Length: 211
Image (cartoon, rainbow, N blue to C red; front, side, top):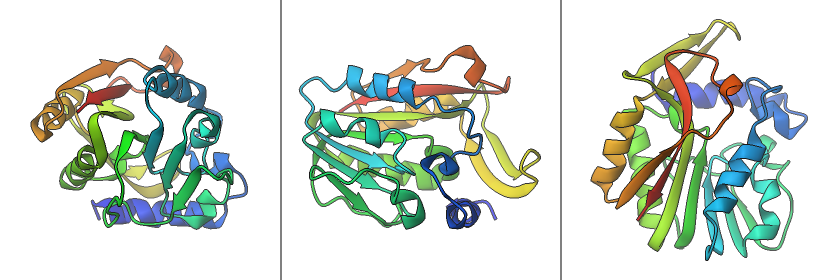
């Protein structure tokens, strides 16, 4: 199985056993959400509304509640989203991202640590949804682990000893696709400290994409 369905099956088992927001992470000791939040806030000037694709247990979103007038958190698993803070300016949508159709436009769309769980065609569909959900001059921030010079596909995790789907697409390939969708500029940001990048054929980057 090489599509997002494999990822949903994998995380579905994790969700059933989750007892904290950190249970949405494969390596719970590696929480770099403070860097994610810092990046988002650096680009949030004149931004009041945020839509987040794949919010998990709210490790990032929970730190942003006081900074936006409206946040829409989309997370498939209710077992994960129950850890997201309850706030009048935050709404949670428990829906499959591939089926979700935004009903409102926002100033910013974020997608952090989620894109590799979708294959090439599936991820392109989500990037187009992000583009269409943005107001004019809006920004899409895509943070993910990307391939370096080539796309890396993983169907089994030796560390976890389980079937696991991840497609770490080449970062240049991904930048080109985002520009082809219509984003006027795409900047590559080396967002994490060196110790976060454990493998020599992938690297964490944030792509800041302006409409």
